[in-house]
Amino acid sequence: MGNYSPEVRDCRSETNKSNTKIKELKKLLTKPKEKGQRKIVEEIAVEFTKIYLWKKGYWVMGEQQSKGPADLYAYKIIDNKKIDYFIDAKGIHPKANYKPAFKRKISTFRERDEVINRIQSIVYKDEIRFKDLDNVLVDIA
Image (spheres, rainbow, N blue to C red):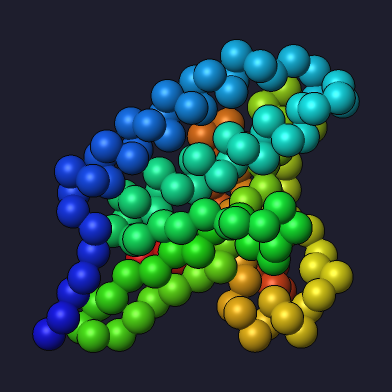
């Protein structure tokens, strides 16, 4: 049976790059409502999501257009079957003055999102959860 995953050393190398980027981005965090913070938090969420997926043996590709439906595309092949996700990464500012409920944002393009099997990763203080269109937890194996 065919199992095709990235090499462990490649995943480790990419994880190290993402960890370095996260450290640099965290230095830029100030108060949640300040200009530019949302973009920084989302970049951290994207990097954190990539690390999570590499640890699970997924090939991970980034979005090429700034207004696309997903930030990441991840897939792996187990027993000659492809498991894939289009992932929209969302971050919650670590200095937010509330305890997040980890609810996904409602999609304005639900039909498209159903077709491409789009899910959201929600990242808060190094915790990550994946949710489907109906806000149900998705187990990324």
